[in-house]
Image (cartoon, rainbow over all chains, first blue to last red; front, side):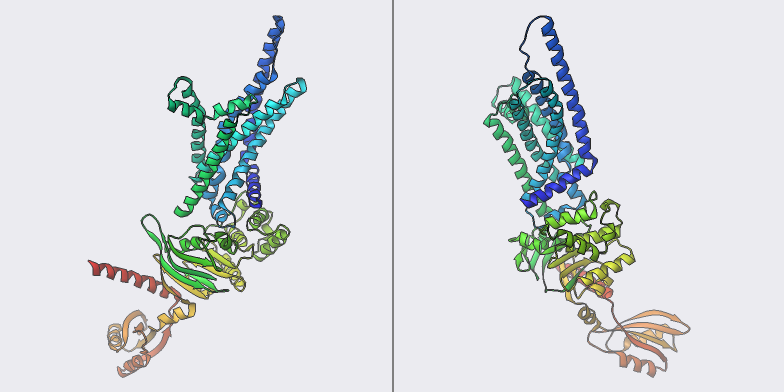
Amino acid sequence: MKNIWTICRKELKSYFASPIAWLLLAMFATIFGFFFWNAVGYFVSVSMQSTMFGRSFPMDVNEMIIRPLLMNTSVIGLFLIPLISMRLFAEEKRQGTIELLMTSPVRDMEVILGKWLAALILYACLLGISLLDMAFLFAYGRPDWRPMLVGYAGLILQAGGLLAIGTFISTTTRNQIIAGAVTFGACLLLWVFEWVAGYETATWATVMGYMSVVRHFEPFSKGVIDSKDAVYFLSLIFLGLFLTSRSLESLRWRA
Amino acid sequence: MIKVENLTKRYDRNIAVNDISFEVSKGQIVGFLGPNGAGKTTTMRILTCFMPPTSGRASVAGFDVLEQPLEVKKRIGYLPESPPLYPEMEVHEYLAFVGRLKGIPSADLPRRVAEVSERCAISDVSKKLISKLSKGYRQRVGLAQAILHNPDVLILDEPTAGLDPKQIHETRQLIRSLAGEHTIILSTHILPEVEQTCDHVIIISKGRIVAQDTVENLTSRLRGQEAVLVEVAGAGAGEIRGALSAVPGVARVQEKGSRNGLHAFEVESEPGRNVRAELARKVVESGWALHELRPVAMSLEEVFLELTASEKAEAAAAKGGRQ
């Protein structure tokens, strides 16, 4: 446990010592800020219209702002996650510091968990920025915070799964760019798989639909925790971390 | 302290380490000597539990590298060929991280880091970013990292590679000063390094151990086949050479140049024979003037070349025999 924290701290320090963390924070703040501005602008214009026509639609902030925003964030995550996970092991391999980690009295799994956790914490920091925007909704309206909380939990779960996959991919190369590109491809596939399920009803299409990240995130954005979605993300995390540990093991044999 | 039995490491096609066995007792400094690609790094990586052997056993302080890697790792300090440094960290930060990784209690950590920095002469750069350090400093930070948790065994892979002569000298001094408390294995392809720093040598070539002994023994073992420098005046070089070659027990005569009618030769005798007296007699009987006659010690460099070359010759002979 102590070792996991040691690795995690070092990893976080590296993120924030290099421009990568700040760049990601800035990018996320800008993109999320735009989506927020867009969603609120739309909401305002719709509510103005409905007042003008004298119809009193029940305008729901949760349904009209928070939920689409969370869905957008989930998609932004698909783009940013490769940038977070790509360096985890590729950089250690390039620098040769992997030899230090693997000859220190720590278990492989402790190294993996430490790194994965650090990546997840960085992602959580990104999400933290979005809370600043969300705070305005609470300042000027009365949205329900519970579905939003569930939505954020879903985002963290989703990131956990994709980061685990990214961590695995990062162990397979010493080139960060390659790790990032392949992870991006994997994230993108896990997103678009769902499209097939839209028109095709064969078993393979259903299975592909089940594999889609977006489909499993959607209930979270509505504030619904379905055990099958939680299980999906947890299995993704386990699969990713398991593959990572296998990959490190094989690195030892091949090295 | 370190025990290696029939260790073999095989990659896809080639064998990096082929059935080597050796033992290192506590407090010794052992030099691993061999040309590049001889299997030094592979052996070290197996000992540090970085990679498992294909077959054979290796143990450090009584713990098997395959069965109890964590125990082995606790007792080993390892400096890989390129020091494993994080360029974005400051030196003290890096050492603190390694210390925590090696399980040094946090109460002792600042003291240990300070001690080791002092010892490796890196205290003056402790607040600097590692990326800003010169090669010599990096190497010393790497060494500091290896001795930080005061391990029983130190494994240093080419610790002086790429340093300038002054830094090489300092690093060797530092390694020597560590000798008493630690058992040290260091690899190198530079011979003087072994002569200056090590008690024992293991010469390794193409994955096999060709010789292992103390530095003195190894040098004298090959000196059993003695080389003598003879300087003679009074005749042509060819004539003298012929006469010297004819002396019984002489294996080889090599001209070492002539000046002012004085001809120098290096005469190698067959193993175990002292031909100095006969050489002198021969020269005097021929009516020439004997100016100098002295034994030449074979430097470890020659021993090394000799051993690895004879292995090559053997291999060639074996190949020829088979065809």
